[in-house]
Image (tube, rainbow, N blue to C red):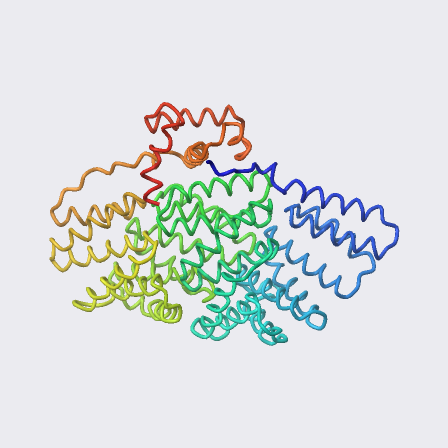
Amino acid sequence: MRRSRLSWSDRPAGPRHAAADFLERSAALTLEPARRAQRALAAAQAKYLAAAFDAALAVLATAETGPLEESQRARAELLRGQIAFASGQSGDAPRLLLKAARQFEPLDVRLARETYLEALFAALFADRPALGGGVREVAEAALAAPPAPHPPRALDLELDGLALVITEGYPAGAPMLKRALAAFRLMNITADEGLHWGWQACLGAGLLWDYGSWDVLSARWVELARDAGALTALPVAVTTRALVHLAAGEFAVAATLVAEVDAVTEATARSIAPYAALALAAVAGREAEASELIETGWKNAERRDEGEGLTFLNWATAVLCNGLGRYEQALDAAQQASEDSPADPFANWAAAELIEAATRIRAPERAAFALQRLSAAASASETDWALGVEARSRALVSHDDNAEARYREAIDRLGRTRLRVDLARAHLLYGEWLRRAHRRIDARDQLRTAHQMLTVIGADRFAERAARELRATGERVSKRTSEPSAQLTVRENQIARLADEGLSNPEIATQLFMSPRTVEYHLRKVFTKLAISSRNKLHSALATSRGQQ
């Protein structure tokens, strides 16, 4: 039995807009000023959740002209900050949210702490002073705020953990973040709570290099966003989920999610940075596509004061250039990324790219600080992902038997995870080291494994690196033969998988905001590329790819 899917028009997005319009109309018809302001505030909140940001601001302005209680004014300030953040005005959001958090302190400690956490995330995203909303200022204000009621909630633990990471360093905050992550995974939350705090939970998982939690929490976040038709949260949730699949080497699934983000943002006329698309292009080594996305991303991030966006762009540039063998460029980009906030996962992940690039241009001294930072994070997180990447990075700056032991440790640890990209790169680096040590037979084993893994998952430029190394050992390397699904475009892949689930052309068309005729056109191309003649053969044609994922 196929899994039921709803089109966006069938999901609760329509009722959300209807509810917002109803509340706005109700406010307009209310004569009593205080009640009118209260209803206008509720309408603004509903429009924000429906991703109608301009309309939300207009109704919010109406609410603020009426008599509001102190708590309602704080809620209005909170909403204004949330709208600023969600609509891309990242530079304004930290200041507004920090002001709201301080207003809530004497009124509602729990809500004050929730708002401090939102302010902290907004400041991390901007990652610059941003008109008084700088990361350290918010972190210090949060630590000075009234303590959480007992027992602390997951978000209370995350707030304290992140604030400690920012003010005292990664090892100081990691234990608290672990408690927060465990609480997020176990807590019985409402749909609204899950939607509201999904990003915070997922960032905590990425910061701790905890792939299992990242996987579970991102899947829950996406499911909640889809079921609720939450158009504000959905693009970010799906982007996060795409990165989870990308790290596992599941490029086809990641590409399908990238297409979903495109469809939702196009339908809602929202502007969201194409982080998932860029990450996929960078790891896959699609230079032209990645370079275009990076150039556009720089312009948008600087225009919108998205400091975290700049960190991500530098990380993606470093990954792309390491795959291409352009180590000077990779080093420069990774250096910029790794100097950013310790509470940014991409800044931490960039340390590994920096170490690889530095050792490839024989400048290991430039890797010293990055290795120190990476080792501290790995020791504090204690996950196989972090410890595996740290062992792989330490092997690069080690010599003789120490290097070999660390490469083997990296392969052993990463082999216990789903992180196929990092594992394949460990085999590649070990093979390169063995060849340079003139151990050609041993090198071939590692390089064959790396080449096969990287080819299958679609990391083409890293696969070419492995192929060059294999040829240097004297081994012939056959020309790459792509698996059938890898020949499909992102849109074709998405349509093929939906058709394989049993959706009809009209259902797929509604899901993807296109006409049934366009779906039929794409399916004909899919059948041609996969050398099949009907839908009932799709499953077997895609089975190899799906089984590898």
